[in-house]
Image (cartoon, rainbow over all chains, first blue to last red; front, side):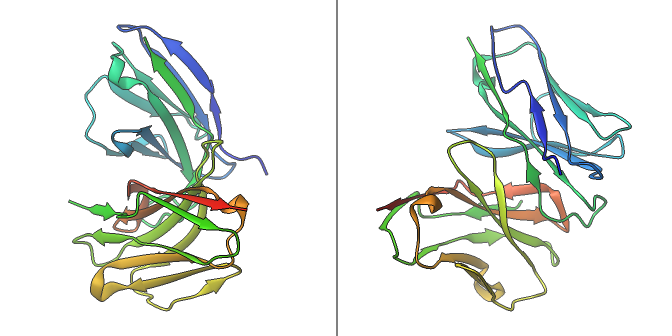
Length: 115
Length: 115
């Protein structure tokens, strides 16, 4: 059974650019969550999607957005990149969805470096 | 607001020693999940254990065991007979209600097991 797949694994951008990250959840999982991991702030929740609807959003500016497709694949976008956006972006999927989700299955992450 | 505190930033042990990782949490929810995840150098967080708030029974799973005490809001994790492969960053996490998709993570404890 394939795990959570995130692409690209590594990318380098410059300030002001935008970036799109992709996440393919485990087959059958309908809930997809995104987290940002940095040395200074740790793991922070970005947003969660379930059945193509954003169910929850963390405390990030509007430059951070996402969406989920009918096949549960998800993308997140960061516009007008800032140096502080450099981080490991982790995607996680879970089986049950709704308000009774089980454990999260994480991808290996997309490491974004903003120069 | 929810909060997870892992007071131990780094722990170093010698192989075969037992090690306990501490976790204290804060939540206003009456029903929630607690998790432990492991993040090896590759970056992918791996689920280890889950505990429901209404089940304080402590269990052992192989070399892993956990001690959940609702009265002190603690969810400690013990590795028995540690091995070098256990070296990783360990995260304690708390779900928002029963939605693990939006979890609050502690800052992590870096465990180093020396041969």
